[in-house]
Length: 336
Image (tube, rainbow, N blue to C red; front, side, top):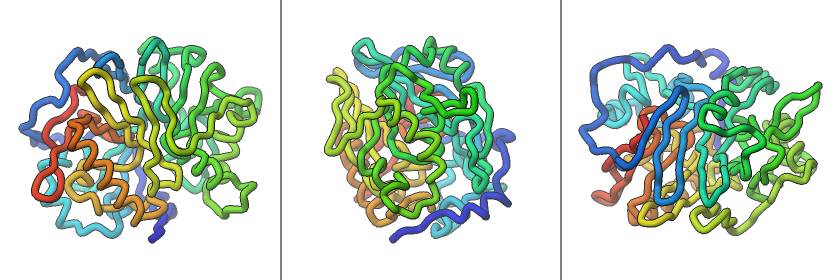
């Protein structure tokens, strides 16, 4: 089943973040999933997993979208039952709005700097989507705050080709879109590259995104298109996770005794851990997305891996445990 969001709805409902409702309700009590070295600066926070340092760098925080827009087929009563897990940092029960971050995960592994997804980007023309249209941010300054200049980036991982994940692949210079990270290899699943590429005749709503955020890095010879899997180094491997898009991917981290899964948009809210069949309207193939979500959650739970979705606020990541034929959250990450 394919179902796409009615972006005309977002034109009416989208509004910027004004802070989560301070209800005093905690999302626990649960322990931190990772309590190792952790530090914070403005716009970022960092943990260490094995030999890999992981920093969260914000582009935009707390974008609000109505729950009924993102999850049009879900029963509102289910969200009331999930309040313990989603209230405060992920959902406002008073307004029935979900909170989303636009953020990049910066990994330092084996002497290289790796970005996982690049957000919305500045100056992008997205007239049908006010969340993405002609935005401005301090993203490059926030990268600099963690010691990363554009020329320092060695690898850019695109978990999938959607406008809020590939935007900073390029920036506007003298009227032309040029690669932001000129020394990096951009890793893009061939399935997504082919699906969204307008020269292949697909009628998609993302032609502008491909033209300004994907084609320029490919034309510059910086894109590596991969199929079955892609090993970045001994700690990091990309594997297919189709459904949200045909070429969606998970970046698996294995270093020492630590495990993590950077799952992109496989999940948009902790409520999908509790109910993996809860599909957002953003999934291109909803049946396949549900199957992939369950398969990845099975592996995350069995490996005791940290689950790291793209857009979570709050702790940003969680540990998952299999329970009663489903899943539950057993701990939050040390991100703040």
